[in-house]
Each structure stands twice: as structure tokens, then as C-alpha cells.
Image (cartoon, rainbow, N blue to C red; front, side, top):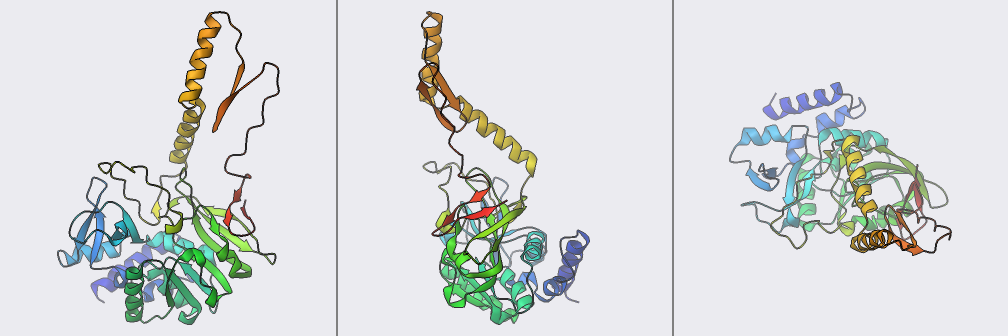
Amino acid sequence: MSDAEALNQRLVDELADAGVLSDRWRPAFLAVPRHLFVPDVIWVDAGDGTPTARRREDDPAAWLETAYADGPIGTQVDDGATPDTGRGLLVTSSISAPSIVSRMLHYLQVEPGMRVLEIGTGSGWNAALLAHMAGGQNVVTVEIDPGIADRARKTLAEAGVSPTVVTGDGADGYPPGAPYDRVIATAAVQRVPYAWVEQTRPGGLILTPWATAFDEGALVLLTVDEHGTAHGRFVDNTVAFMWLRAQRTPPRTAGRPDRRRRIVHDSAPRRGRLGRLRRLVRGRAAAARGGPKVRRRRRRHRRLRLLGVRRPVVGVRAGHRGRDRAPGAPARAAPPVGGDRGRLPVVGGPRTTAD
């Protein structure tokens, strides 16, 4: 048994012992070695939050050990604009952590012979696992970056699997291969593209990371019905994914090149609900304080109160700028935050809901 085979066996055993790899998917993980899909140059955290290139030729043993660790691996930075010779700003493509991949495949409930659409080919490892289960002729995977797509085609062919690799915007799906029984995205969305719903047969499933600029993300599993709508629930809230390029949010460090963002790979485990609660409390506290205009109005009203002058009532709600109203007038109803509660917005079609 080679070193790669031994490390792959160890990884599969660890995932199975942790309860995240089912017996149905174990043969696929053993048959599709992960290191085949890891490029010779990978990007690792230099210790200060910036990705630094690490080459296979410099330390082959460490590179192979990294390939079979249960963690994400950066494979591209800055959309390919940074050469493989120094440091980048932000990881823009990666191989997801094996434990996250196995959990997502479990949620997707793929059966042999099903038609599967994958959004975000990346390295091609996930597409190879899907092809092993459903059959290569039944799997279509879409990648927006031409360089990444070309490398994935070559790697998949060398691995002996043959899904269809399409270079294009995953937000549009791939109509020529529709309808699909399963759709899986490996990039986070704020709005579920209606093309995915439209190209999924009734009763089919869509699994996608969902996030906002406020929340790092969760996995949502949707079921498409015969009316062209989809509904479902969140099945996991412990992951963070890169954005679908068409829905990227502006970086918080825009205009400040000296401020570098922390590396967040695909499927990097989050800190859980405690960190989420802290962010929620901080956000609501900041909203309650209001903006500069509200604070100036409050200071003016305090001065008037000290002088004995009656002031109008100011209504301030979290997430809503206060407005003056006459004394005794009914307060205005607070507008809904983020749309109807529990609903996910869908681009270009009927609304998709999640419990």
C-alpha cells in the first residue's frame, strides 16, 4: 500500500468513526483519492491571515499530509490574478473539507442513475464522488473560471471519471442537461437563482449554502414542487462558504488596501451559535444607538427637556431610523427585516421558502 493509499484509508476511517461518512459513500471516498485533485501549488495561512503559496516540490510529504487532512485547501487566490510566487489577498477557490463534503452528499440523497447538477466545479473532487455514485454520464458540473474548469477536466480524465464539465455562470444552471433530480452548490448565495428551481424536476432536491452580509451561512435543503416553487429547511449552520461570484458582497476593507481580510475557505467550520449570538447582539446594539442624525436629535431633545420645553416623541426601532411623530399619534409599524420571516428570496421567479 502506497503512502497516499494509507493516508486515504486513514481519512476514510476517521470520517466513518466520527459518524459523518455513511457506508453508502465509503466506497466512493476510497475509490477517488483526494490528492489527485490537489494542485502542486496550494495556499496556506501564513499566520497573519494572508494566504501564502506552498509548493509540492518543496516538501512532498507535507503536501501529501495536507491533502489527506480534514480541512479545506486553498487552490486559488484573488481570482487567479496573483502569481504562485508570493502572497495573495483572499482565497477564491478551494477544496472543501472532507467532513463537510461527506455531510453535504448525505443531505443530497443521491441514488445511482439520478441526474445531478453541481454548481462550482473547483478542483473536481466533489464531481468525481458524485460521478462514482450516480454515473459519470449523469453528472453535470459548472465552473465560471476557465482556468479552473480546464484543470478539473484534465484531472477528472486522469482519475478515470467523466462528468460533463461546463465553463459558465453557475447561477444560470445548465438547461441542456435538465431536468435534474438533484442540484448541489458549493458556493454561498443570498438569493437562490430561479434557474436552479426551474431546471429541477418536481420532487427533486436543491442543496445550497445560504448566507448574508451579516451571517456567514448555513446549508439549506429545498424540495421543488409541481408548481415551480421550492420549500425546505436549514439542515446545518456550522459551515462558511465563498460567495457565488454573481452575488459577492463588497469587501469590508474596500478602499483600505492595508487591511487584509481573514482567510475563509470553502466549508471552513464556524465557531457555532455562540459566536453567531454575539454578532447578533452587537448588531442590534449598534442599530439601537442609531446613526449620527438620530443621536443629534436625541441630544437636542435632552437640552429642550432641561429647559422645560415639551418635545415630540421619537420612535427608534432596531434596524429602522427614528422619525418624529406628534404626541399621542399612533406609532408606525416596524417594517419587516429581510422580507417575510423564514423566506429566501429567489431571483427571476416564484419565491422559495425555508422553514
